[in-house]
Length: 437
Image (cartoon, rainbow, N blue to C red; front, side, top):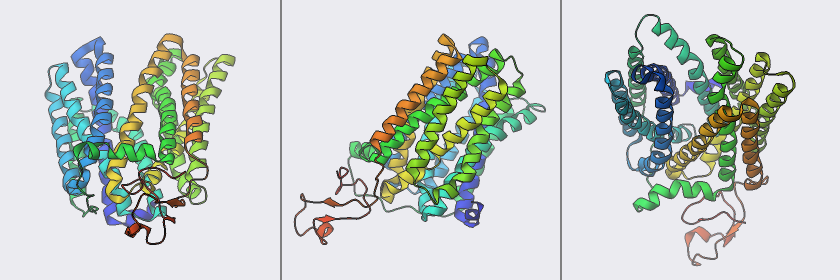
């Protein structure tokens, strides 16, 4: 897997991702402490609003940014967005009102909503071979998991010798380092597509996404992943600190178990995907998440909540979660022309976060109103619905070059020089507005 780091361009992009994620993790810790300083017992409401603002920015801004990403130099765009993120973070230590936090977070997350899909769409152009790109996806998954583990640890060490406001400076340093790493390499920028209207460009990524069966299946699996992930991220603290009465370190180890499962999957997936298609691997991941949640609910009903069982469940849930998410870039890569990839990656970014926007409050409401078992059963039911929808929407026979006809084109059109019925790598575009049946 690590052989692809010998590619200088990819190595610098990967390191840019790592330092930016570490900085973001520091800001997450500092933001919680800032919210408590500003709002006291109302900090939970402030943070809940912050997370909602984050998701709204992701869902609303990403498609718009994806529509224009092919119109500007990618390196300039990514560096500019890193500078915006650094500037917004630099202002956070100086806020005195809650509304100022909301404004800065919206600015920061809007820049991230433009940065992340553009960055993700650049990697397949840097590593065009599918085997190497698959390994890049696994490294990216590892980076996210390491951020969940390393950032809180680093924050704890720094807080022993400095105030939480200093953590924001670490975040600024992370974004600045990311910008320097991006500017140090030349990035491929595919030729922009033909000029289009604003509406057409803004909705193009989502229209391509929803017209492609494998991507509709991916969206359904995203719903399942968000349901299981929301159970872990929202309710672990209640189960560990409230129900079990364990320490803060036990909470950290419980979250570590989820990250460890995800990391394990990221390490073994490249070899698995060398021999198996994406669909069975991702469907199996969805099944593992569902069975893990149901198994924990059954265990609680039988003997009550036990910490070792919770650790094992979160390990398996993390494994299934990564098995669903890691291969998703491969599906996006093969489902769009290079010029359309930023828009399609932006559509995935927005639609997947729309799933989280539904799952987060559902997880919290079920746990608060009914307890752990109903929350587990409810979210497992939602994940099962996503898995069944994926089975229906994503055909088992998913040829990359299906036989199709062009009865709508004139006989002298160059695309049908080989005949009206033909095969080629099929993606949704102006000549192929719908999937062949």
